[in-house]
Image (cartoon, rainbow, N blue to C red; front, top):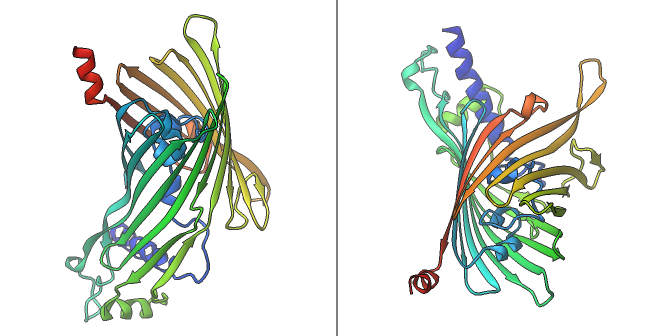
Length: 371
């Protein structure tokens, strides 16, 4: 009984903390952070250091300018991962379509949710007794819809892309929010070996308008437990800039290659717990390396999430998050796997990530091949 009551009490505290966090009059840190997790096991295996490299359907998320590298036709991507021992589930589906030799459009859908959360606000009845039949379940879910467009510019090797983001967040029947914002990205290929990328997320700032639906009974519980009653408000996500450089070289003439990328993620919402931090901005670096044989097999390794953690004796120690991954490609089908936080080196929990990609040639090309 004590264990069960403890779990229920924790659920109440977590729900109340989430609702209270939204009642903020300024732009909060870590707003819409579910959009910073990443998509595609190929990218996660390199610790998300792919802003310059990205060249498939997942570029709609990482850097929409990379969509111009997609071959003529369609490309479809999907990913599923779970966090916190399967409590939180993250799903992604992306679609991209070339319009002509210079332009490509894309669409991405992301869902990050915790389902079946106990609602214990009515756990105690009018007599003061505990009635477990009064417990209901709800879902806290975040949804994002990204509409992408990319185009090759007149400068050789230079591409420009952008996203329009529509965001929907729900906490059961208690709260909901709708938001919108813009992303912009550049990608430049120099010669055969080098690529450079710049991604401006929430370049317009992203605005989430929260509406709370707290009934009289729940308000009474909040007051009696000393919790603030949430109010409708506007949550603002400030811009984040990610700059990256990527190099790739062949190893002899047997189809082997090696590539690597370094990215710098620059946030503008004040001091964060990153390697480089100021009162105005914080900079979080990430490094990714890959080895492969032609397009068939690719091994990946990355390091990111670098931060200083304070120990019990007030000393600080540097922690990093190493990731590994492997990718297999057969004709127009790609299967990627990533294991994040290898050896449990970071404060983040490890996760297994699997993603798929499928390329579909245009109908005209298929007819030409048959003829």
